[in-house]
Every structure is written in structure tokens, then in C-alpha cells.
Image (tube, rainbow, N blue to C red; front, side, top):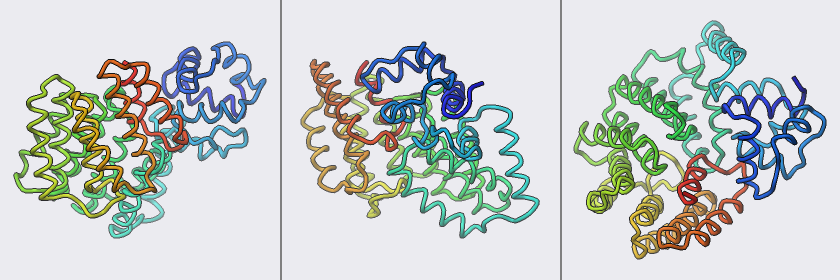
Length: 371
């Protein structure tokens, strides 16, 4: 096997189950430039040539890893931690097992208050960091946390972290995301916390519904959340919007529109003042949900108003969500019959966002627009 950057490219490619031809196709789509399978094989992965900074940025984006990870002198342990998060390779399993047993044998790990403090940090970081960074950190923390699941409060911590971990996989990626959402729901049940049980299921529903992936599962999680309790909560709010997106994508505009009204009422009862946490649903975020939903329904008036309302309160520290809104405009154009213009607008918006800030959800949205 080649060494340095070429070896890392090869291992990340294989971790995604891609051929060299598939990697070439993804790079061409993402960069707008041409690259061949032969060049990847004979120049990069063989170690004959190092990719330029231009190609390193696009490789990092399509392979879901930080650009620094593709540098030839990358720390091997950091690389293994990233691969651990993508659930591949026996050597990675060995690394994780060693880390978990070490935590159990040599220390008790952070206490529950420390874990709850980490949760707050993750909630904020998820909103601005790329999926690969979050996934790698979560994988390491989950290995330690699984040794400490001996109280309901620790199960509540695990439920939130597992939900975030599920979100680092696209809902269309086999059963990975759904399986993690299922386990997160079971962990929430063990927390004996009704609010947590609803939140995990509602967060799964809006993630899958917004992505347009695994729609039957989006409905299932939403229905479970809504059945646990009829009281107002952020979980029920998320579940309502998730179910609305699933209905719209299934062509059930009537149900989707009714759920828009339900979602607005749910926000009035349980919306958040916190602006920059994934655990919160402030007014600007409701309007991001509504912007995409209205674009999917072909309702330009509601979509434009939602976009204006979202931009009015969207924190400047969260540029990824501004990209979402621009891409929703692209989807509106496509639905109105202007596919070339809509695709171009969405592509320009996505390319303007630094690759390390990209999320899997944005890439799935780009796929929806180009389809």
C-alpha cells in the first residue's frame, strides 16, 4: 500500500465503500473540475503525486474528513479515531476496545455533571462544525461513556450523544442512522425521563424528514414522540415538523399544511430562547424548517416569508444555515420549472461555504435539487 496522503485517501475511500471511479465522479460533481479514475490510482493513491490544496479541500469534503487529516504527516492515532467513527476495519475495532477497557480499568471517567457539561458544548458545536469533526469526537466519548451507564442520568446523556452521532450519518446511508436513532430511543427510555424520550424521537423525526430520507421511519419516530405525551415540549415540536416534511415528500400536501399550523402552535408553547444549540428550536430555526417545507410544497409566498423571517434572526456565527436558506431558493426555482437556474443558485451557495463547514444534510439537499 502507498504511504502518506495516498494511503489516507485510499483508506477513507474504502471506508465509504467507493471505487476509484466513484471517488472521481464525486470529486467532479463537487469541484466542477475534471479528475479521472486513472489519475487517482496512478498519481495520488500510488504516492507518485501529492494532491494540490484545491483537490485536498474537495477530497476532504467528499470523504467527510477535516482537510488536515489528508496531510502526509498526519498523526496516525487521529486518523484511526476518524476511521473508528465510520465503523470500519478490525484495527479500528481494536483501537476502540482498548480505549474503552482502559477507561474502565484505570479510571471511572467523567462524572455525570461533567458529561452534562460536554452535552452543552456538543449542542453548540454541532451547529457550526462539520460532520466529520463531530463524528470523530463523539465516537471517542461514546466508547468511554458506555462503561459508565449505571444510572438513569447517564442513560440520558448517552441518549443525547447517540442522537447527535446518528445525525452524522445521512438517513439514506443504509441503516446506520436509523439504527443509531433506535438505540438512542432505547437509551432515552432507560433514562426514565419523559422529556428525553420525546426529544430523542422528535429529533430523529425532523432529521430524517428534513433530509427526505427513510420517511416511514420519520413518521414512526414522530408518532412515537407524539404518543408518549400530549404536553408541549421541544421534542414534540420537532416531531411535528418532521412529520410535516415526510408528508410533503410523500405528496400529501393537505396533511403537511395542517401540520404547519400544528407546528406553529407547538412553537408558541415550547419554542426556545437559546439561539445556537442543536437542542434548541428558536424562531429562526422554525422558519428554516418552514422554508424548505414550503419550497417542497411549491408555496413560494410562504417560503420567501419564512426565509426573510429566518435571516432576520439567524446568528452570524451559523453560516451553514444561511446556506440552507439559499439552497431552498434553488429548490423553489427547480419546482417552478427553472431547473438550470435553481441548480446553479444552490451550487453557488454550497460552494461559498467552506468545505469543512459542510454537513451531510446539505449534500443530500443538493442531491434533491439536482434530481
